[in-house]
Image 1 (cartoon, rainbow, N blue to C red):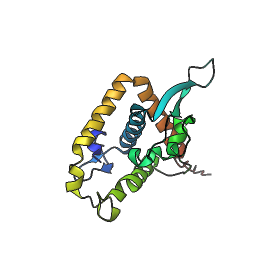
Image 2: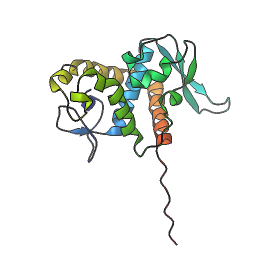
Image 3: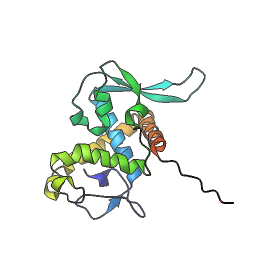
Image 4: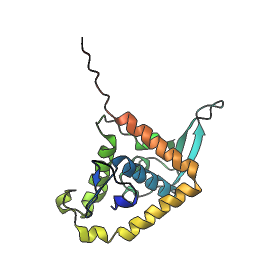
Length: 188
């Protein structure tokens, strides 16, 4: 709700911050949404994040997500819906949790819009669910909670740098795989 706490300002373009007169970087914003969601779910003991090597001889690996107990997906938002459908004790890779089988020009913008549409629009923070019409009095009341989440994210990155880095890398990989491939122009 307060993306200015999670992302830098871009040189051009970017996501318009509701109720404030500037923009933030799309890619950093979706990384922040991803890290905060999964780190907080682990903090609340709903999931466990584990590093899993792809082979005995390789250092490369993936971040495995083990679901520990059932939860209400509305509490953690759109990025948790796939996990909510799993049974406790089930596991998958974080890449699979984040990845959506779509091909779009800008996957970071697509995912931000999905979070907006499923998590924020129904809560009445925007007139008629329109992102261009924020209700600033409601949004600004959430600033202290957003500041706590930003502080939680920084602390998680400090205490668990390997897990934090893996969340970022798996999210980036999923976003890359959701991007439309550029068609080659062939000239004779």
